[in-house]
Structures are given as C-alpha cells and as structure tokens.
Length: 112
Image (cartoon, rainbow, N blue to C red):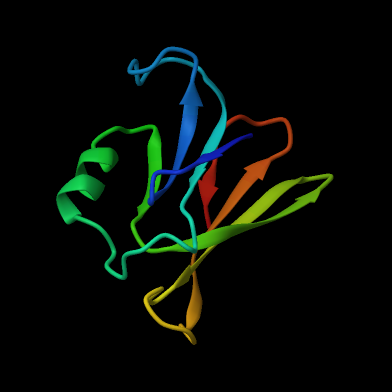
C-alpha cells in the first residue's frame, strides 16, 4: 500500500509496474488522500474526475474534503473514505463515501 496526498482529491488506484500500460502487473494499491483542512466546498470538476477515471487502473476519484480511515487485519486492509459536506464553516456533516478492501497476498484494491 502506498499512501500519498496533497492534491485536494482522493484517488485510489492499482499501482502498476509500468504506467500507463494497463496490462502491466499490479504491484500494489495507492491511496492519494485529500486534506480535510483545504479550502473548497465543491466536489471538484466533473471533467477532472472523468479524466482520471479514463484510466482502467484508477478505481475511485472524489473531489470532496475528508480523510481515509484504515483497519489492518490478518486477512487484509479495509479503508473508508470519509467526506465532509463543506469546510468553509464549522459543523459540517460527514459521511462515508466509499469502502475499499485489499486482500492479504493479492495485489489490487476492491471497492465494496
């Protein structure tokens, strides 16, 4: 698992041995995490989201602010993207936007 950030987007993808070769072996999973403190209440541009999702190794794209909660067990890793509806004022309601699973011994992420 690779954890990166600082893009103001959450992007979850299968890490390929040779990008952009979609037939290349999957060697891991990358979670690009957004920041919950960055400015911007909107979910980001649909065009940007769709551009990312054109790549078959990109599994999830989210432009809202939030964080990723993770749990590691002997069978694998479960993660949840938790978003907030806005960051411009206090009291934003939060919600779980997507759940992910990486099975122990199997490269790649599953959306659940």
